[in-house]
Image (cartoon, rainbow, N blue to C red; front, side):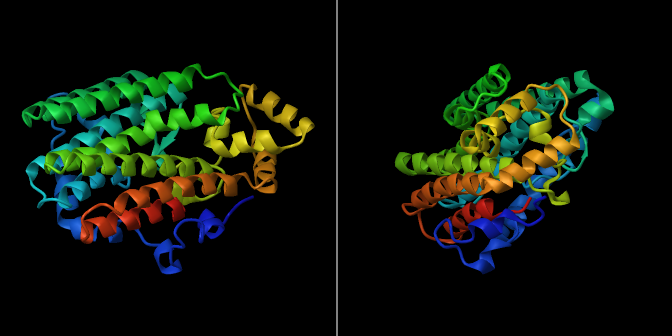
Length: 345
């Protein structure tokens, strides 16, 4: 059973990050926008205030459950590269968090998830219908807020993004169980996760009227960061830790073909591959089977492989920051990239 942080495996994988930076917390990285993040938190919570009490309850349940707020932070950091952070930037950051939260509510219904952010998933408490409709409300709320900014480019960015995210959900849903195609996996995580990271960073730059080439650089930075974030998240699913906010082995239980499992299937012996493919097609996977798969993943160094792939994306993200204006915001973006690779939850 894996009990240590995967950070140990990759301390020297990307840009030789100093050990003192490996355990840094997101709030320390974002301290230069700390007051704005605090204000954003108030906006996120207090603006959910409808006459429908169940809607307020469901939305607050997931919004108050925590989360790193990395996506809205990208909006604020990108914007602060070029100008001081104003209310418009805060509102776009709020939109990004609402969009992300809406997808979580929908994802949990599709996946039949039991937990989210170390607590019961909304669907487990109020049912699938309330979860789906609350997600719909947050999507509608987000786009209504965007229209008040009267910025067509931002509206185009976010509408493009939500379209891609929906495509990612359908692609994952229709993917054949047991598919071991790494490129399909990468396409899914780009659509479901990375494109919103990219759009968050791009939106902050667009709002601050940054030069187009820098807006594009920030978009690429965000996309690479998002790819790495999801790959690390998928690797952590095979790491037993209460810090991750979800049960150990959730992806395998839901028969999701994530990168550690794909790598394992490609590299294990023929009889082991047959065992894995048969197992994935079963409707229920027990704890002993999970333990056996986890041991195989350790033996074939599938987590290490996944983190090296994540490291490639972090290297790309850091390369994009080289053309950005120097200062605290750029420093935070670089530290954030290293944090994503070294995080333990």
